[in-house]
Image 1 (cartoon, rainbow, N blue to C red):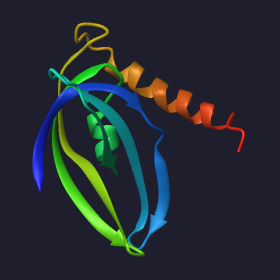
Image 2: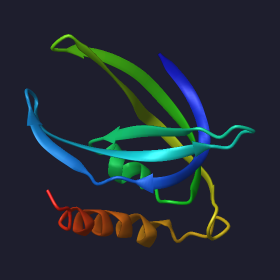
Image 3: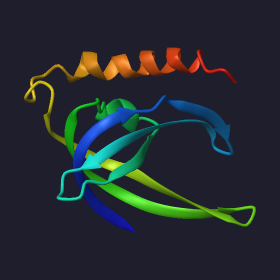
Image 4: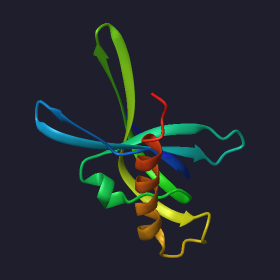
Length: 120
């Protein structure tokens, strides 16, 4: 199932990596808040090379094409919203000025270092 979503990127989560049947994989999840009368927050993911291709940053206003997929594991169903196309329409913080590359790098470093401070 494919759908369109428009909103503002409000949070980037740390990049996750691992090994699967087809080799190494990497995934990044991010939170988008829709821009409607009743805004909703949606967690989306990008995989592999699309992480570097899209370079989403907090504050980006985006149009996203999303595929929804559910799969079963040990009797439970898990649903993922995977972004396969992202178009940036602006940035709330800088009016769309081309500063997304430096901003795009900062959340990874900040997120990685903050996970080291967890008490568990």
